[in-house]
Amino acid sequence: MTACVVDASVAAKWFLPTANEPLSAEAAALLARHAAGRLQFFAPDLLWPEVGNVLWKAVRQRRMTSKSALDAIRSLETLRIAVHPSLPVLQDAFEIARAFDRTVYDSLYVAVALVTGSPLVTADERLASALAVHLPVRWLGALL
Image (cartoon, rainbow, N blue to C red; front, top):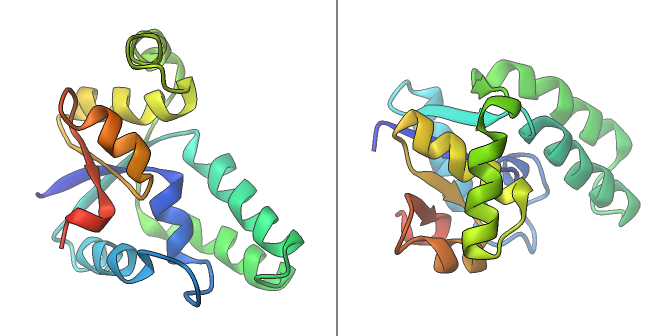
């Protein structure tokens, strides 16, 4: 795999405290491949507010400090993720959501995977299980 779409369930793991965070080592290994130039990341523009929301929840739950969350948000800019606008793939995302009874949010990532010809990598095992037979979706836990 030389490119993949990452969703917020993967990207958030790069910043959340690793204690009691399943698949954090796998997410870190994926990020290391990207940082070494061996893997290109794609995502819809929805990635940013979704990761921000996960970090906000972690602060509310006292899993991390506000400063750590803000530092994580600032570092998102350095990750060189090729971002695709959501609107051009929204109709496709809607059709995927309707056909597979998934959310349009999750389906946006799948639609970007189809446009880029790259698999979606997700830490959401239920999403991967529901779609992997039909669409290019891979569970983070099965990658390594």
